[in-house]
Image (cartoon, rainbow, N blue to C red):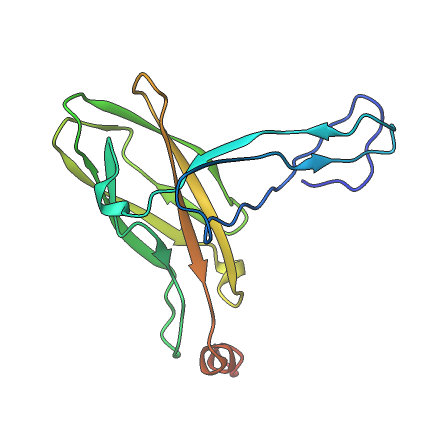
Length: 170
């Protein structure tokens, strides 16, 4: 739960949103965190490697590499399957390290053998079916580099979808 006010020694979660749309390589950002504690300001470093060809990532390839649960008509779109392919020569353990738990659930395999492809799934929570949003989830691997993959999850409701969901009995 996010808090606006913190007592001394208390803590809260911060959501930092990084849009990779205009980047095409390794990039480091240092968002500033200001408090009423006074100077110096606090910084956190975020380093990402923006991959322009998500079909050629290593050691995993995700297909599709973004989850789009947008809805244009009255048919509710609340889940989507995707494939995870291990293109390395070692077995990998997968761990879900971050996701928007107030928006969706993510079901990923715990382990994927070298050369193997497995299914995974994202399922929206009922309370967000009438919302548009852009979030993501992050998977960490057991390889030596502890590689992480962040997959965007998008939901956009068209005007007709929003109207259909407000009709009586829906």
